[in-house]
Length: 227
Image 1 (cartoon, helix red, strand yellow):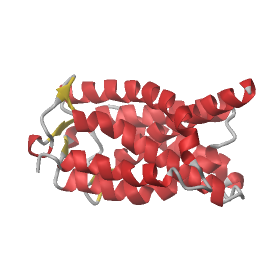
Image 2 (cartoon, one colour):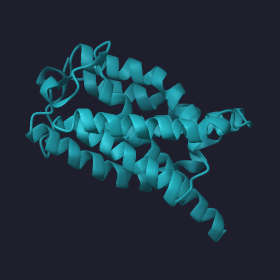
Image 3 (cartoon, one colour):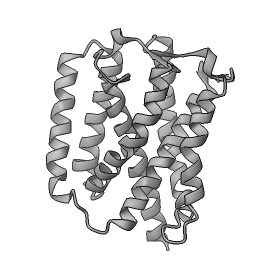
Image 4 (cartoon, rainbow, N blue to C red):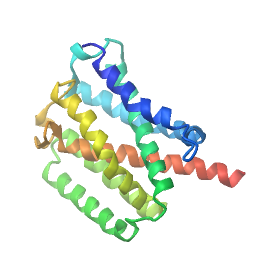
């Protein structure tokens, strides 16, 4: 039982690593552009994770972790911010390779506006819930930064990758919240769940993945410009 969360991390990253060496996508050649973003994003989210545990936003079931902690966080939770973004960037790269047409490009601005509007609404309605406040506040800031400040051209492709990533998301987060391994304090969120998964998790994950992919593209493009 104590290896449950560790096993989830292992299975999350196992197939993306093995399939990275596929001769078509050759994802392993892009690994070096992933890790700087994982480090930067990981620091941000682990800081909030640590604060969340202090204020009781969520906690971890000791029966399903091996008992190694850093800053009040189990080792498995720290690994989660590596394994999940890595796997999702793999999905993003595979979709970019196999789907040459940007099928969501014409809808990207509408999706951005809808997400931003929904984020603002949630902030107005649930400003007193810590998890909701941080989740939608961060998402609104990231969307503004991506669309209006750096004018990113990859948002439509990110949204497609995010939609596909919801399949493993529901499997992984479904296990984490149904056992439960991660236990949420509903006084600090909307208390609305999709199955056993808090609604906020969907958008918390979206912000984390979008930041990682923006950084991934930044470091890759930086290398290309030097070359």
